[in-house]
Image (tube, rainbow over all chains, first blue to last red; front, side):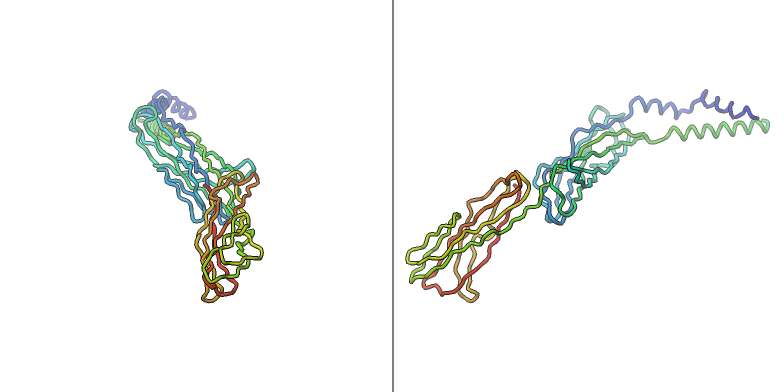
Length: 155
Length: 168
């Protein structure tokens, strides 16, 4: 009786399931995601009351009442390259933007789509990223920068 | 099949099942993107002096009194002007070295004596845009031309105007 589990384990390694073979194929041409362009919210004049700035993934900038959007905005751009007809999910993490002096604000990035079916070919599948910034009351002036992570999930 | 070998197959099946589950995880590729924004501090505009036309003795004919940005006065023909005159002046604060635009919101205003008598004033500034200093400060002045009517009723006349300063 004691020897039986060991025998079973050997059986697994000798007769791999078809699913394991599929996994091996997947690894050869796994989708990759590349960052091409950073998001820029441009220049914004703060107010004493704070507010939000929204840059849609299609590039439309909206400043809440009181804030003055002064232009220079640009959406982020990413490319996904992978096997044809692969379906991927796109996930973004929030980012903390900070200045050299340590002032901070929160950025919630938003992608132009949450899923994507891949076309074959390098850099053939692109998605853009906008986001929402939240400014506190009397947000200190300065150049804010921060990073967010983009994850492309596949099975 | 003996009972023992059936148990063995069951165990094997469980291990297969475990293997099958473990090969279906979600995989993820990741990349990092940057986000940037430049925040400028809110602009403040503070009046540092009122536009003051001084004292005027009207005449039988209408005429004008002009105050320039350097506080100097041009008294229209027939009028007598005296007293101190000052141009309107404003102090601006904002983000250092940024350019701001300046506008008078209501360049034509009316001064009244609190009753039914009034005079029209045209306002102007030569500063339509300026670059704030290294400390984020700036200032500008407002000149005005007052239209004094024929035999303008005596009294103390006043009115208000507003200015706007914004980043360019």
